[in-house]
Image (cartoon, rainbow, N blue to C red; front, side, top):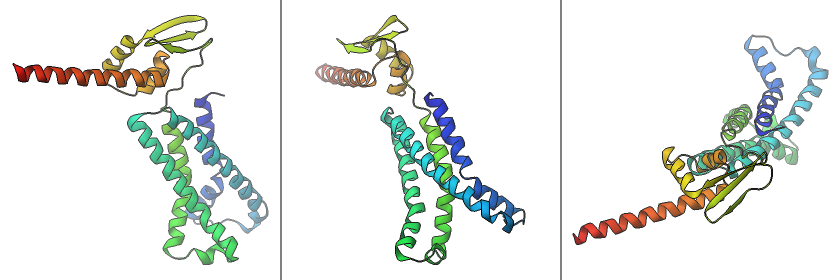
Length: 224
């Protein structure tokens, strides 16, 4: 299964495992409390969904972290922020249960007043953060699997795709980089089949060279 499908599965699963909360909340919104007759199977249903939520959280974190490693610049910062927010929410949701379990008191006694509201918001927010984080992670360009090997050397990157070799030189990459308004290096590297680290070295060297040229021109103007 490719990354796009995995992301879709994770997002749908995040909503599905939140079904007990949605059903209960929307029934109450309509003035219909959860029927007592449902209690026996509702506990099992909720437990299954809770276990599913743990798996969804793990899958979402793994997907987002893998995507984050391939990002640069602002995208990487935003992704890191979203991962951090999800992690904090995850801790807030779990901590009261752990504390209640250790102290042998019910969560209803532990969470009172504003704490109960904050915890409730965190529980509801956890699903939204998963969907938002995975959705943002989908922006990361997925490097296509090439047949053969990809090599970088002498300032050139070589891509072999389905047995057809196409060479992207440093100059060609930098031309495209300038033409697209200095957008994501990772995105352009994936599009051209260039190793991301190689592309980053090219851009860094080009920026250094440009800086030196500007410095030389400035000195010449001063002498003139």
